[in-house]
Length: 332
Image (spheres, rainbow, N blue to C red):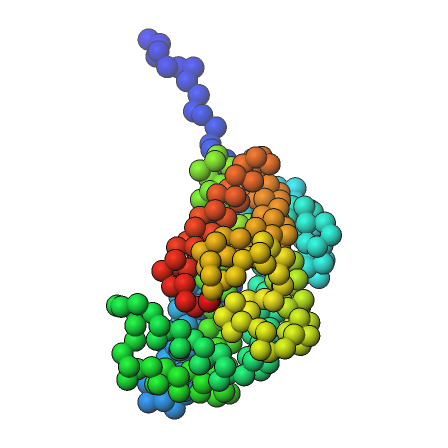
């Protein structure tokens, strides 16, 4: 008696799939950050550490973010080239960005760019505060806040408190350290959100990209823009009279490379903000982002990269313009 399946052969075993690596080293940073943040926050409640509540909460939040991101897989690229050194990438993004972004596709390391962007921003902010003086900056902010329409107008008894606390915050060394901490946290969180948005844009258009690739592209793509804005801004900061520097508009940079020079912010605040989005550095930033997406992702054409970069640029410009329309007095 013969069996109908006598010639049956079992299929070969499926190849073993190696799970993608994860940046577990982030957890060794995340846990101490969270613990230190809680301690600083607790010391800030009885005001042992002035401003400790905000800076401690920021540290604890960054620890939570790092811990959560430690579970996000890293990309796996076969036959990848050797990783470039941080110095090679920081210099190369000015002169050969395509090569840097291609290297980041296989080795998405972003810490060096993160430090450079944050430190340059902090140096400019510190110099800006020293040049204009805390009193001038805070008084301008508080006066403009008092001019806000209801229901945004602070109570009269709150105005002077805001003035006193603001000046103290800019003068107190401990609180200035807290500002450094919150800046580090804010830069990373903002860039991480933007990286997620650009990643989503690439996926919508049919491309393939990993979150760490997107984050690295965002940080290294920001290095040339921040370096030009902050370093040239520092030069202009000491060439111009403090009386000619706007206490709010000058906080980011004093470089005027856009169409905003054609309009007066006090007379046309919304048009001024729209015009400032059209300039040399704006287009350079768009080009860097599109170059980064094209070389840092997989299966992303030039048209797709430009489409994602321009779409998010338009959305960001509309958001800033909307805020300006609500609070035009701050740039007047």
